[in-house]
Image (cartoon, rainbow, N blue to C red; front, side, top):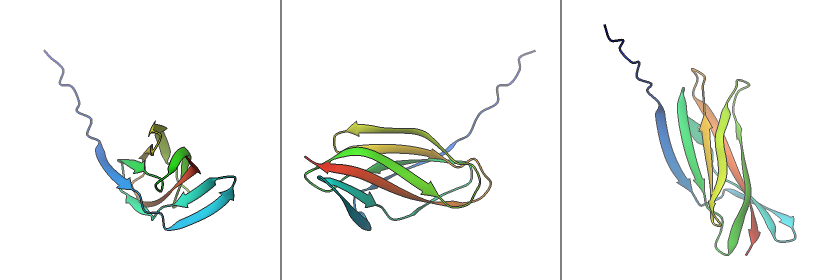
Length: 107
């Protein structure tokens, strides 16, 4: 008798952000851009593509999430000099709010 394989269903969504709501000059050509908050659903994997202002290159990125329960960045990397990718997972049963930010430098 064959065993049935369980199918793993993952909720995934991709968003692209390029307009920061706050920009903070960090000196020496570095800039922190804070993007508008986004909702991440229970059990969802959310891919966020962050793009800096024209004439800038990405250096690093980060995020903060509402609530005190666990959440994970399953990946965080520059996909090019002008795009940073964050892949976040909300393993809880609660909808959460994510605020992503990007560090960039003048080109």
